[in-house]
Image 1 (cartoon, rainbow, N blue to C red):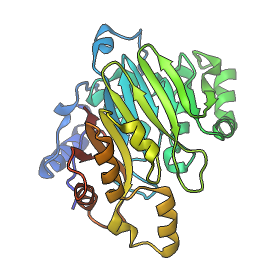
Image 2 (cartoon, rainbow, N blue to C red):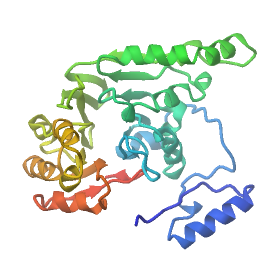
Image 3 (cartoon, one colour):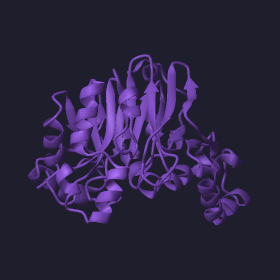
Length: 336
């Protein structure tokens, strides 16, 4: 059984509901609203005046906005990782539920740049739905309050996805632009798109994002990312079969965030799905061998495929061949 942790912002007006939730959280050993660094009494429209000195001085931080898979999971959102650096939040994939988690993290950890309309940039590893379903949520949540367009980077097909998304939302866009509602920037509903290839694809001050190709079955291209700042190096695998390229890119990294499929769980699949997964995902023991060679400071497991086995099985499988520091991420975990 999984241990449930309920976390919610303080909202004294919602007495009956919060009283009930508070009792449930206490009964389950969960954490109360005091765990939130910022606790507004109700939903707040946020418009930052600018990046504060405190944000500029803060160390680079990784926030896991989604650690799940295509399989519906009550405890995990779709794959998404935020890297917060000098007052900006950079998202890597945006699976279902990740933008609600971003709003939660904004208040739980007092990270203003994770308020959805303040998120500046999105980097997609590949075009599968479990990594992209909250793209529309990110882009269109209060788009009329965005000062600047979202910047989106990803594989071939990204522009088609954006065009379809904008077409889908035309009734909303037309009504808001032509009606009486104020709109801060009329183009803010349309992301600025860059379809990428391997290499350095984005820099800002000391932050550098490098894309590299990974093998993910039938979907081509698919990318991993190496993100370097003045105080942290993070490698994000995206979805991938075992890859020597990831081993190379992750060598000496502070954090390697890598997808994984249980060796034992793989055998629970049909022959057809076993063949598919072997070309698309990395088994726990193969990941342990990769990490042994790359020696990251911390190995973070996400997008874990268990097929009904206890989640701890994957950690045991990795640890059977890897003696470095490894954790199984949950939604809203932060590193380092």
